[in-house]
Length: 151
Image (cartoon, rainbow, N blue to C red):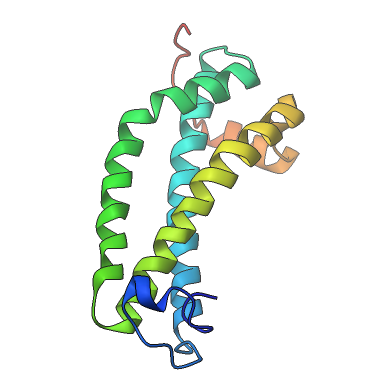
C-alpha cells in the first residue's frame, strides 16, 4: 500500500511507479521469516528452561518474557538501524527498510505478545508432547537438558 499505491510519498520522499520490484515481496518474506524464527527459538528456549525448572506453563511463559527484556532492547536497536534504510534515496532499499520494520513490528506485537502466550496457556501440557518414536529416539541417544534448577 505504501510503495505500490504511492501512500506516504511526501513523508518518505519518493515517487511511486505504481508497482513493486518482483523480488521485494520474496526478499521481505525471507527476512521476516528468518527474524521471526530466530526470535521464536529464543523465546521457546527460555520457556523450556523455565518449564524444566518446574514452573507451570503460564508462569514459564511469563518468566521467559521478563528475562528477555534486555536482549529485546539490543534487538530493537538493530532493527532501528535496519529501519534507517527508509531514509535511503534508493527506493528498493527504502522498501526493504520499511518492510522489515513493519514485519518486526507485526511479529513483536501480534505474535510474541498475543499469540504465543495465549496458545501456550491454552495448550498447557500439550506444549511438551512429543510423538512416541521421537521420545524413544531421545531416550535411546541419551540426550538430556541438564538438571532442573529451582524457579
